[in-house]
Image (tube, rainbow, N blue to C red; front, side, top):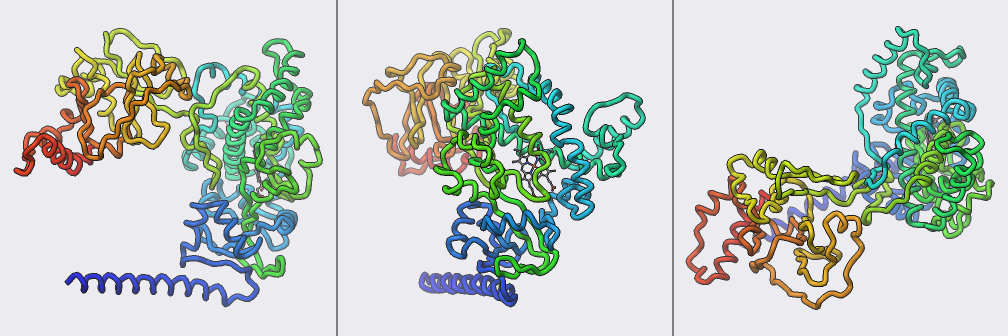
Length: 604
Ligand code: HEM
């Protein structure tokens, strides 16, 4: 019987492998009928290599380049695509739009930005929309109109950041429909109002230049494009600049000198003017180095409108070309020691304008918001570094692909603070912590009649933490005046032993996460898997996923109140019957732990 089963499984596996192989082969043959295509593989039918591309990003690109050279074919994001990592060809494509090339951005992006947006149009329509956009954000306008507003806004925005944890790259995700509706309403109000508003929308509505009079639909798409294109690039570059400056004190020191020199010439509260901005040469260098090293834009997309011969390969009509410019940012010939953050290299002005600097694109689609973006980041850095010293909280993960992102913002902790004394007293928590505060009244309200399981005569109220469902992998409990649990090595449970541990209060612990006592007492104890280990719930850290609901604290008041609370847990314990073989305490514990894990696991 077992042999038959093995044979059947092997046959099924072989059949499945044959199908996969046939599908891959069929997809390759389908495309190989076309002559002159670049080398490369098209992956699976329909899906192509999208999964590998999105999962591995830059390393996928490098691997393919090692196999096939700087120009190769693939199938990503629903479209047959030629990827060019060849600087010369990239430059040619950017400079020669119109000769069989148009923007090739995915439909999903065009759906957000609208069919009149700048990336959806080409030829004369592109010239007109781009001209209108430059009349809003071009260098002349930003000097006279944008700078004073950006200065005022940034000063206001940066007020009261003292002691706070800030997510500079805060995420916003508004649906197009809502924005369109809002813009339509505002446009109606503006038209009906005699008030002279002084902003981009108003200038679009009352454009005096007949070349740039846009329809309502075009105005809406133009505004959404500005919001979309200018938001993420500027916020991500600002976030990364703050990160790099934090990691490179010499660069920060030089930047501070530049900005304090500007402030010294000014009265307190006086705004930045154009000359001040123009004197910020090291700031500009920091912004360029940040954009290069972080590579906020990996490349741009184009589409062929006819069969084209590029670098000796024929690219069929309708194929996408991913002009992948990321690698050029790390070219050691252009940027010696390319992985080092070295803003000083940009003080040589020729670097900004060299032929292969594609940080802001190139050719007829060179970023029209380039100077506006640099101005916004410069003003932000000015007020930020002249007003604050800052500390990075924890070791934050930075994702590089498909977009540069700090997925957890600049927070590391989410605090559940349980106040166990008089609930009429209000605990003051400093600004900037990501926290929830509960007192006895809150616990009574949340748990209703079952709140009795949390005693306020002792310290059991801290166990409320475990009852609040959330998807955190680690739980740390720190008692007000207590020690410091430590999860700096892979650990399932770590317990503050109150031995030579800093006697900090909890908030101090949080702001000094790296401060550790080196005089550890050699008191390591190995607890075998599956053994019940009684311990106190204070100053404890554990991996929630690993420990599960079988966590049990030795003292009565530290018993995990969750056991009593969950409606499912009560009947479970009432009806639990252990097998007869459990004839000693240890066997009973183990059997009970097994039952808990299998039947109450879902409660974690
Ligand atoms: C650090 C900041 C920025 C970076 C790194 C950046 C980068 C780029 C790049 C690489 C392109 C070329 C796209 C292509 O060729 O298809 C581009 C185009 C564009 N950018 Fe920016 N950008 C930044 C800031 C801004 C800002 C603040 C705005 C706001 C107005 C803006 C608006 C646009 C628009 C509308 C286009 C399309 C131009 C066209 O198709 O003619 N960008 N940007």
